[in-house]
Length: 300
Image (cartoon, rainbow, N blue to C red):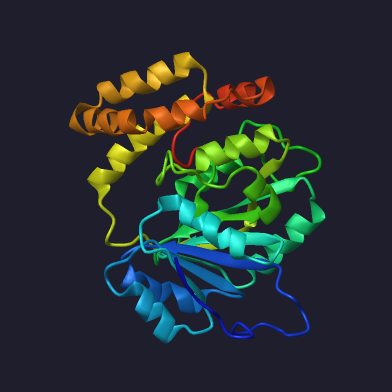
């Protein structure tokens, strides 16, 4: 792992006011997306490069000297965010993808909400998609979450989120293990949400904290179908009762070639998933069942 040090002060940072939120960006082979997103970030920024082969790291080093750059030299998937979170020195960490950024003032607002609600471990933001700024469908799902709103939390309780629209309490995030290398990438949020809730932390949707997401043209939709099916099954193995695991496996088997490929990929990760398997507290499992859906990537 190679790290490029940052400058003494971040752009726009007030020397008399220590920052409260660090933005952690995990990236891989998204040079053009970074060119658009990085100038929009406020406060300290840590870019963790997952072994890019397109010159992304050199581009960040040359064009954004105020950004702290960590070159992993290989692809660690979503766990790259853990590297950034460990390096952060602020109490809160905001995640961003290389094709997303936080609205002006959003991180100050998020810090204020987290300060005011000490049991809140994760704030799920309102996400606007594309230049049309369409609300991501997950926002409506989170806003109407059937989970009760706890009196000590700032908004509807959720058991799912999108990483590019999440601000976390750093210590709680790290204590829960952050993202894991079983799921690796896509749908990695669910297991973390369940473990935070199992530890007694709150997760809430806060509509007035806003993130922007302009999905990269480099995304491969067919591959994402495989990952969604694979990771739904792996997450079930990690935390859900065996009947839920069976239903997830059956759904993949009925999913045609993408599902069959998902099953094959899941098998190679199964030993590690079984080693880390543990049940959820009854109240968390009951809350999950009350959502009346089999949870998957980004479900609330």
